[in-house]
Image 1 (cartoon, rainbow, N blue to C red):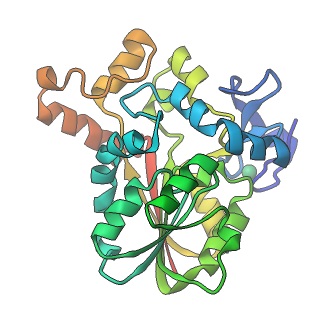
Image 2 (image 1 turned 120 degrees about the horizontal axis):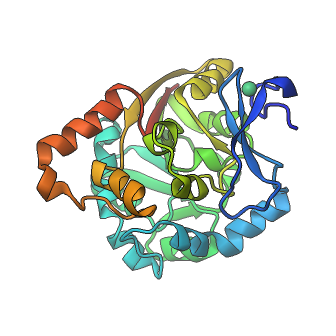
Length: 296
Ligand SMILES: [Zn+2]
């Protein structure tokens, strides 16, 4: 039995939140801490196991997982099939984008967000550990680093990352390192899955439970556990709830035990119902996503 990986609370306050870990073995579980609310992978994969996973397996792993229209077969197609993400995410960052600013995206994948920032006149730098995508990004003319810690003598007005934070072994170190790369008055904008996701926190769907909890993540965060991390660091921050998946997606999980239902019943339900359902999840914090803002 572990101690909490976030607050070090003792074993008596830890329980198994998710017995099954996608891509893991029988020993892996996600544990949760009653003290700080952190949900964490244990046993912890070694640094070497993790490196190997990112160098060799990540794209294949993702394409076996997403179950939607996103195409991981090549970089160009991946970019094209992620334009809906660009449209969804831009409103969360737009007010910080202006011509001439320096922006860093950590985990920039095939660069579909960088393209959108560049179109607003921002100077874009990316961090991308995976070999195949970083070559492609350099061909597109982006300044790419394999690791954030390789960036020297450069600071940014905006640092952003999408579904990266939960992969980090040490969230305190990761936030401290990225905070150092911010200019004075700079901002971090981070999109993080929220473990209050109704598919796991309201509905009990076995198929979802064996899909959701992934070996690629060290942690799953709730608003309470993010508060714990950010308060300990003493940063000025804000959490904003977001709901990515719609009522049809949730119904298909219940009906077929599968992802990929997004939009399926929208025509029948009508936009009012689709919007109301989404807004209720957001208003009650029963949502699948959190935007975290940190200001320097
Ligand atoms: Zn804890």
